[in-house]
Structure formats: structure tokens, C-alpha cells
Length: 88
Image 1: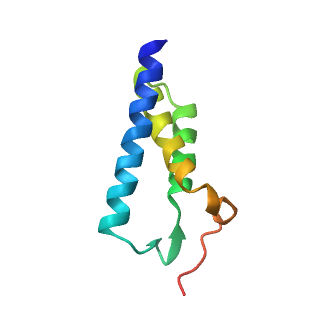
Image 2: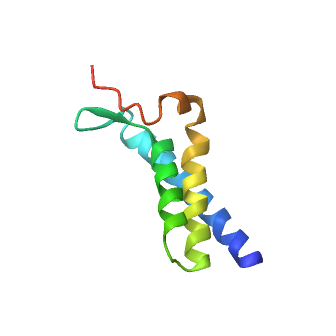
């Protein structure tokens, strides 16, 4: 049980480091096909993918930590998730 919790904590830390790096290097918003993509959406998708697959528990807990970290950092925009607003 402890290794799974540690794996989730590492996943959370990795997501926070990645977010910090991304915001410094690419301060503008991310668009795909001229639609706004939020990193909270990516976190939700990671959790959905993990829930459908047959993946080792250690890897699952790591990916869950990453997904939760992405969602946590973008909670203030959760009302905009999956709206895919067009680029102005």
C-alpha cells in the first residue's frame, strides 16, 4: 500500500514540475485545431484512460497522481473544461 501512495505522490510532484516548466517556457494558452485546451482536461482524460485499462497498480497510481495534479492546478477554470472555445 505504501509504495502505491508514494507512486501517486511522485506523479503529483511530476505534474507540478511539468506545469511550472510549461508556464515559464510557453506562457500563452494552448490551442488544438483553434480550440482552447486546459490542462485540467488532460488530467481528466488520464484518469479515464487509467480506469479503462489493465495497467500495473504502481503505474496506475503514478498516472492518477499526475492527472490529479493537472486537475488541481486548473480548478479555477473547471467551468471552461471541455467547452473547446474557439481561438479569438
